[in-house]
Image (cartoon, rainbow, N blue to C red):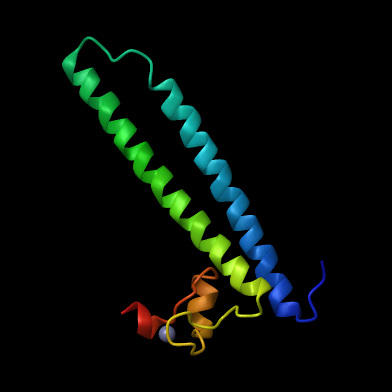
Length: 112
Ligand SMILES: [Zn+2]
């Protein structure tokens, strides 16, 4: 697929790469979690560490899943020709913000 606007195809590529990296992280975490479902250690402090690790993994996983969802939404808006337009106020999302957060779908004003 080719976009007439070079900026849009660059963003699409950027988001695609970011999404792939997140997906990889998500799958890695799932693997780690599956392994940590091994029987819990008999020692209670070992057990506490195991459970704490699981919690950290789950938090990382949750963050990755949320970001993937955000990227999917940004890609969807990109397909609709709405990339860079705030979905709340329909204003332009600041260029600096998009540079920092290419998957942003609301402007800084609406985020506040
Ligand atoms: Zn806005």
